[in-house]
Length: 253
Image (cartoon, rainbow, N blue to C red; front, side):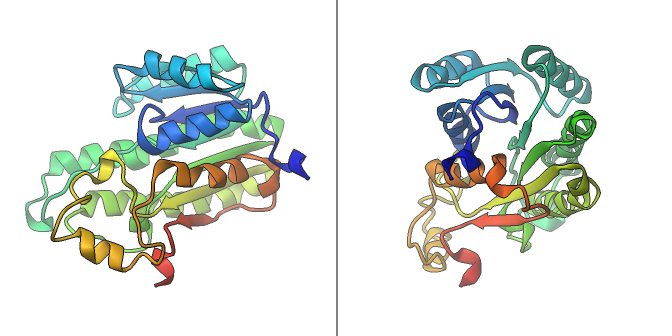
């Protein structure tokens, strides 16, 4: 039964793996023996890769890439394929957040968030999907959000992008599941990560958030690890087009 979760030697491309949820993904994939190539803008990426690799069986290397730049994205993907030889698992985790009222939200910030949170996700899915279609197998995991289900507050671009990630995941699944490619998304709940620094400890927002979380706490990056292994492995071969909340019960409240 444990072979269902075997991803040893699988080739993984992971975006935004340097911090928060992305680093948790890198850690658990490496622990299970995968070979990981991280695309991230983090200037400390080399040290992070060495740190994770030193702890676990798998390997982690990376390339500093600004995914807002489409040529950098394409070159970064090509570098990953040159190193790995192929891609078995793609995890689109990189993302940005910016908060402002809808009536004053800057268009340049709208463009920036949509570019990295949605367009880069589609472009990477397209690049990886072409290779996966050739071999008729693959796993794509997109990181959505609770904002894929509701509109949020003062986050119009983020909510629009994450709603798009949800629908994109389903659209890709509709075309590719019959070719052996599972495309799913994880929708993390309220997580204590750098993306939520404006909320954690905020006396106006935190009480309302935690009051609706049955688990009665903020999520932490480790909470996502089991779901990542499930969706990356054979255990989820008949699961596709799903947006799976990891939210401490928030959406069920």
